[in-house]
Length: 222
Image (cartoon, rainbow, N blue to C red; front, side):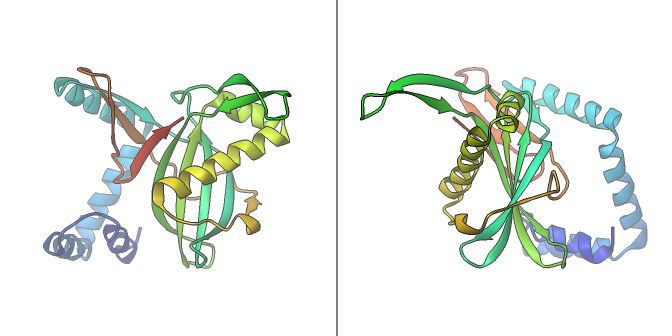
């Protein structure tokens, strides 16, 4: 991890100018960069990550909240543009903590019997990234139940419904416009590095709040 790339990532955080300057100056120090990389590697170790998550759960429990870590499991990636100018990637991922799909029988306007599906999912992002040409791009993670994804893998129509649901979620929650006429499904399973996010649920009234330990917004929808 180079000093310049570390400084670039700092711009994504909600820091004051003074805090940003102090961090930027610190990353110019080789010893600080070395310690920072070692710290990041420690967090990536499964054992250390589990310990970290246990500590977070304990702290949140003292505050009256239950937390669930959402680790996105790669599925596939959609590539398009956002607001007619910037390249955008949508990660379709899964996690066992997301609710399973459900459906209700309904009667259509022509009198035929049909089914209306509900596809619960979590939305995380936006993440600033770069493409293969090192040009800036934006990524979003839309996380479904593994059951939803398994059904989609065996049914093209259901997969289209899952992908449309992901696109709708990004547009509706981030007030943007995706180019749906030029969407490309990539061979890669995930764009960027999967990042865990926290769902916090207040014990008093069971109303869900969201907290993201990677400085990204998480929204859970149905």
